[in-house]
Every structure is written in C-alpha cells, then in structure tokens.
Length: 308
Image (cartoon, rainbow, N blue to C red; front, top):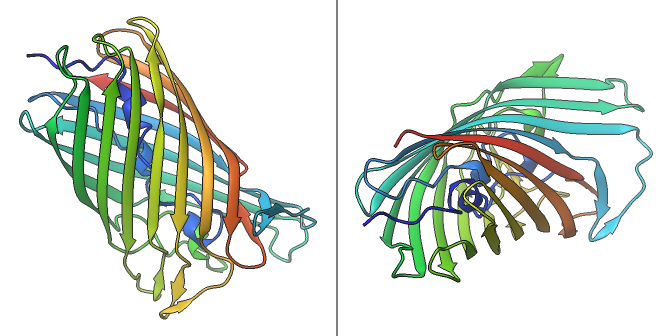
C-alpha cells in the first residue's frame, strides 16, 4: 500500500535538530542536520534537495542576558547544502548530505578588521529504520537512525594565519550521530501532523587537538497541509552543547543551551518538485562563560525533487 507523504517532504525534514549552530567556536561550518532529507520511505523512492541558508551571528550574550556590542562586529555564515535520500526497502533507507560554506567576520575595532573563508564543508551519512509508518489505516510513524559526520571539508583556511575553528568550513574531525523521529496524523488524510525528533552528535578531535562539544537536540511541532500544493509548519527546537575542548581542556565561553522557534512554508509546483522557505528565531538561551556571540536569526530556501 502506498504511504501517505502529503506533509512529509521538507516539512518532516525540518523536524531534525541541528548539530552545529552556536556562535562561538562550536559554530564551525559543518553540515546542518536540519537539512538532511529523510523523506524517502517507500522502496525505490529517491529525493534530491538543495538548501541555501543565511545565518547571522551577531547577538552578544552573557548567560541569558543580551549585552550591547561596542566592537562593530558583523559575523555571518552562508551555507549551500546538497542532500539525498533513498529507500533501500520498505523499512530501511539511507540519507546523505554535503555542503559548501562561506564565512565572513568584520570587527571595526580590530587590527585585522575583516576575515573570510570558504570551501567544502563536512558530509553526513545516515542509515534509517522505520518499523511503522503513516497510512490511511495507521496514524503513527516512527524512525531510528545512526550515522557519521565525515571530515570532508577544509579546516586549515588561513588569512595571514590559520583562522579559528568557528571560521573554518569544516571541523576536521569525525563525528557519530544517533537520531530518532516520531510523527502522528490527526486525520485519515494526514493533513495535520505532530512531529517530534531527537538527535545526539559525538564529536571527535581534529589535528589541532580541538574537539567540538557534544550536541543534544530536541524538536517538536506541527505541520498542516492546506491542499495538495501548500503547507506550513511551526516547531520549537532545543539544543544543548557541552563546552569545546583544546588538548582535552574545556574552553571558556563555549557551549550552552538554546531554544529557537522555526516556522516554515512549502509549495509544491508538481507532485515531484517543491520549494520551502524557513527561518530560525531565538527565543531563549543560557550560554556558558562571561560572553558569547550567538545566533541573531537565520533563514533558508530549499528546493526538493523526487525521482519516483
């Protein structure tokens, strides 16, 4: 029996947490798991997605309090993410992701006021098992996954000297991923769904003895398909990151907790081709150390094409 996808597509993919989106050294340009396409659930299905994300990182925070920035600092990351998803069987599927990352940092009160870097980012591959899924006769869908983040990106970019980890396109280290997702359809047509997801990222050490903090992510929210063409979703995403480490020692002003609101809209031009616009708005954060720069906002445009 054909599975109901309806609001799955990019809406379901938006339920996945992201591993590296802080504004300290843990904001390095590794691929964001939120854009890992996980929509292929029926044997033989293949989806290809492209996402462009603009991430502004200019809020200065002490603990949970905003602090005025007098440095004239402007920090941004622009990511191009290519993701694919293929269903190997009725229960097993595989997803992969790679990225190209552009960093820019300007500091008005600095001897080196501007720094830029760009290059290939890290890649992710995730194997998923879906023991049951939404059909006209079943309201629940559950998936589990495990995978790796591979250090395929540039991590020694230099501008007079080697740039800090937060300005590198890649992390230079392997990582392990554990992932789970649950969806519930409120009606038989599955036009209104509840989504929840969780993932964990364990980061290894790179050649410069730098280790990004372990990541824990939770997300939950709703999606609504108004008709066969248009749909929208709204999620809350919680992220907790351990402090980064150098030579095994914890670094100050890294790690913390974040809570973001993530709205998204989707339009399907055909049964195979769709586009989505999403954003990320910080609601609350409690960060380690005296001061950290962190996310002001981000927005992204995604295109997805199904080959079956």
